[in-house]
Length: 288
Image (cartoon, rainbow, N blue to C red; front, side, top):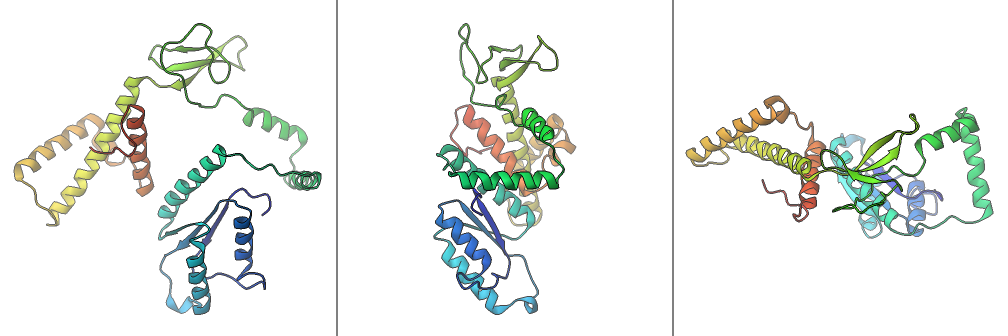
C-alpha cells in the first residue's frame, strides 16, 4: 500500500472483521492511504440482494463507515456494472489529471529503492521475463516522445519544430502534422497529426449532433406513443421528416446503433462537447 498512488475500494453489504486498530483490515489500509494524502475512491453497490443473506451488524457497520468516509474520500454508488464502469472511468481520469498536474512526491531513501528493486526482480523471475525482454519492451513501448500534445495554431514560421523536436507542416487536408523519422525505413518520415483541420472537426461535430438529436427524438416518440406527452401534429410530421433525412444522411442502421449502452451515450455527448469547445463554444454546450 505504501507504493500505491490511488486507492479504489468497492463494498456491497460487508465491511470486514475488526483488527483491533480499525473496523476491518480493509478500513485500516484505507486509513493509511487517506493519512498519506493520496486519492481515495470508494464505491458502494446498491444491487439487490436476498435479505436473508445480509449480516445486520456488518451492514450497519458499513453504513456508518460510508457516512464517516464522505469527509475524507471520494464516495460513489452504483447499481449495475455499466454504471460502475462509467462512474469509475470518469473519477479515475479526473484523479489522474490532478496527479499529473501536481508535483508528485518522490519516494526517497536507499531502503525503499532496494525494496522496490527486489520486488521487481522477483516478479520478473516468476513471469520468466529476462533483462533483454524488459529492455526491449521499455524501448519499444515506453520510450518518450510521439505523444499527442497541444498543437500550435496559425502560420508556421521557417524552422519551427513540433513537440517531439521535428519539423511541422500542414498536410493536403489542412491538418497540422509533425514529420517524425520512420524507424523501419531510414530516411523516410511519417506524419503525426497534432491538430486536425477545421472542416473535419466541424464535420464530426455535426454528425455527433445529428445522432444525439435523433436519439432524443426517438425517446420523444416513445413518450408520445405511451401518452406521456403531446405535441402539435404539424410539428410531429416535420420531426419525422427530419428524422428520415438524418437516416438517409448517416444510414438508418448506423444511426440506431451508434452506441451500445449508457457509457457509449455519455462518450458521444462528451465528444460533441469537446469538439464544440475547440470551435469556440462553452463547455457542456449540448443543445441540438
